[in-house]
Image (cartoon, rainbow, N blue to C red; front, side, top):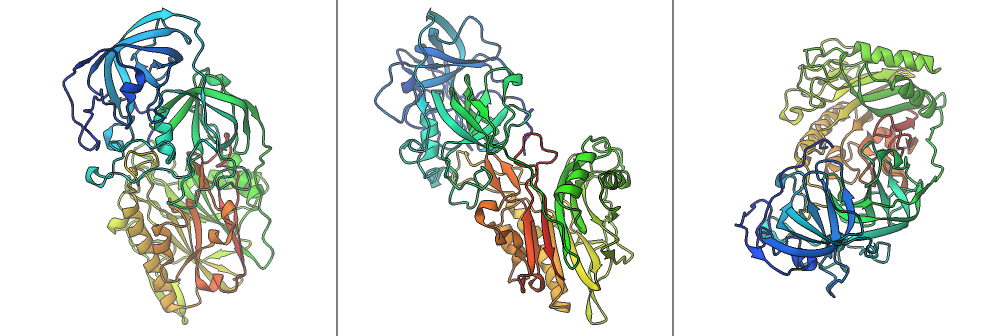
Length: 609
């Protein structure tokens, strides 16, 4: 995901005829007199005055932004036209801290109309109509700010976005806005205007950048814990809206999912690189706690094997989260027999000096688990070749198996290293690994700049269990849900599909040798349970994603832009699934909380081998 510290790119002036941002047409500035804000905004996403100079555009100042790289203020025409497609608000970009204006001032602004694309045109984001290089005249002060447009479940359409123009790379830029039919069109028709949400439930916890997400549709795909579940590409959650603050960072509420911003939250509607349409609040509701608590799963019984996956988010020895992670493993996960950890960094973290070993990192975590009252886990992993597996540069993230030697044993088979491919052989009529631990086809292009799957052979009560720890490539580079391209392009899927095919082929090799082998493929797959990635992994029944055993309202491991969604999964072979003698739990202890120690929730599978 892109960094929050990305600098604001220079504003772009775009010709009014441009409907595909893949080709940005610059026009020589013209001059337009006596235009109103709704004339500038027009009835499409691109201003008909883009690239032209405008004079004496009248409006009331509704908000002033003095922080970040996008400094300026919003103005709104208090005398709207009758067309719901044309916004009455616009952002005035000043580049430096605005001076000489205050909220409630009636002003006239002259400048150049520009279309600024947050994140740059390559991001696929929509553009914001702005007046740049402004000359501002204050006509009067202390005027009433135009009343906000209330956004609620009746105002926001259920349909998310129109299909883009196929002749313009599926861009929606040139399409007429239909705010009564599509949610994204409604939000665009209100760009720059004063809007309000009331008694809004939080569906994305506060982050370090003073942002949170609410829903204006409380019944839309609600989770049992107060979130909004993302369960289909074809059924977007249209009621989600990002909230930022125009005020002090210290005043921003520390909200968890299920909390409520009681009363009115009001401010101009902006478009943000990291989430799309955003209410920039000059007034924010009172935080009322929903009482959300971190979950804990039950302890496995004597005959049950408990296997977990947990992304510990770039854990290295300098982090201060070891005790918290240990407490989570011991008390929230109830000390699983096997834990697949993702994002374990090398012994000096992001320092890029050729270090690849992670024994210091892992030992520090194991010691913390013992201190928290848990077992002294043993562990297995394979150090990657330096700077080959993606993630934070220099961090050399990898998967690691922790296992409780009092409950389960590991079958060591020598020869596994960063570049040797693990294979399947037959031993005493049953499947066995050629090396253990080993990595699946590390030379394959499917794993280029990505983590290679770690495979281990375990024994529980005399029964062999094969575990494949995965961390597929991220969704970085995909177009956002609010992209100008509809439907958005998910380019990162290509590599995940290749990775899923590799893992499925390896599982087939195991099952060809031993049809009833117990096989578990788990980890941060960076894709949904309904995705083609999951379908390729499942194949013709070689694996099945066990999170689908949960009710739909409980299927999530991650919260992104107010969507509770599945990224982490545990897939099981037919021998485990056949008797339905398993139990799956998504243990929600991170993703819904503002004080999370990882952005992922761990998953636990318990079954009787």
